[in-house]
Length: 126
Ligand SMILES: [Zn+2]
Image (cartoon, rainbow, N blue to C red; front, side, top):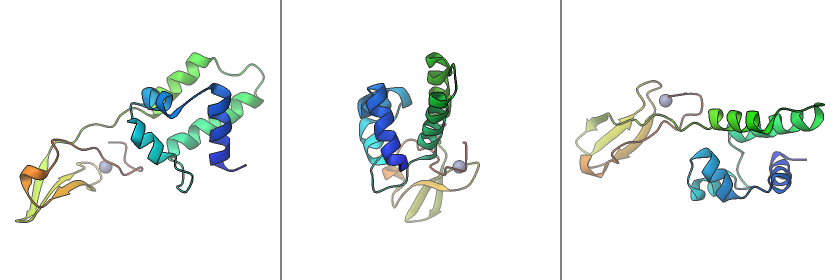
């Protein structure tokens, strides 16, 4: 079974919709939908959920549901907002992650930059 198939089974078994996942994780409905597209690799937090779920099913007593919810909330915690803007050149303004240095947003005009962004580098926990 592929991870996407497992996710489908999990969602069906738990009665979860994309809306529920959006509510639990704090992601928007549209980003949940795009993150879980079948033609894309699943995000790591989903892989962890699948792993925990698979182990729950095989272990005897299993973990309490509240514990599972706790884990879900912990691993999907929204990242810190980065507000520090930087000018690279006259036509290149960016918001950079202070930890890993990756560019989180860019625009040709400072005023077009969003007020904040988040680091999308999965290796970075900022
Ligand atoms: Zn980062």
